[in-house]
Structure formats: C-alpha cells, structure tokens
Image (tube, rainbow, N blue to C red):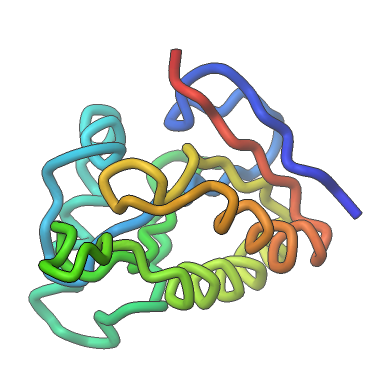
Amino acid sequence: MKTIICLKGDATNPKTEGNKIIAHICNDIGGWGKGFVMAISKRWKLPETEYRKWFQSKENFHLGEIQIVKVEENILVCNMIGQHKTMTNLKGIPPIRYEAVEKCLNKLIDEALKLNASVHMPRIGCGLAGGRWEEIEPMIERTLLKNNVEVYVYDFE
C-alpha cells in the first residue's frame, strides 16, 4: 500500500508531474474566508466562485459531498464539505465532521483514478475545523491510499 508523502511547502503549488487534485475542507454554511481557502483564492478565483454558486443552488450541498473545479490544465481543486458551521459549539464539539470527511475522501477516489491524478492537501480538517490528524491520517489510508491514489500532505513553512 502507498504511504502519505509529507512535504514542506504550499499545497496550492504542487510540484509533481501529471494531473493533480488539491483537496481541502469546506463548511456546510457557504462561508469561505479563513484558513486554507484563502491560499486557494489568492491563486485562483474559480474554486470560491463555484463553491458559492453550489451553496446558492442548494443542489447536493451538504456534508460528505465534493465539488471538483478545474483551475489549470492539469490542476483541479476539490471542495469537500466536511465541516459543520465554523465555530466549536457550546458542548465543545469542533466543526470537523469525520464521517463527512471520510465520505468526501471516498468520492475523491473515483475522481483521482478517473483522471490518473495525485492528491495534494494541507493537513485537512486540522486547522480551523478543529480536527485531529490522528483521526484524519488513518482515513486517508483507508480511502485514497488503499485504492492506490498517491497522496501528498504539505506543512506550510
């Protein structure tokens, strides 16, 4: 089985050959304005525009769904709805929804295999969403890696 390749750098600037999908977590309330999405928006306007359109349409816009947006000849961005709202709730539950993230990753397998693409991401769900990498990493192994998709995780310097 493949293993996650960890790199230092910027996940919006993948350095590998071939098709690449940049995967990241979005919330389920149409908010785009903090965290990794800012790095995406600095580079390309389309992922935010498409996410907002998707939210407005309400069509299949819920936890566990993904949206693939082509931004360059061989780079696509995968908006994954894996976060409920944006704040830790009163019971201390962070916005991350692990079941939804796993659903998204399972849907991403098909896209990656269809395009013969590697997947690039920051440590998804571990920033503002409040998730723990110890929970996310095994999910990536069970989904993408188990299906022979190459995964690169970037730690921003």
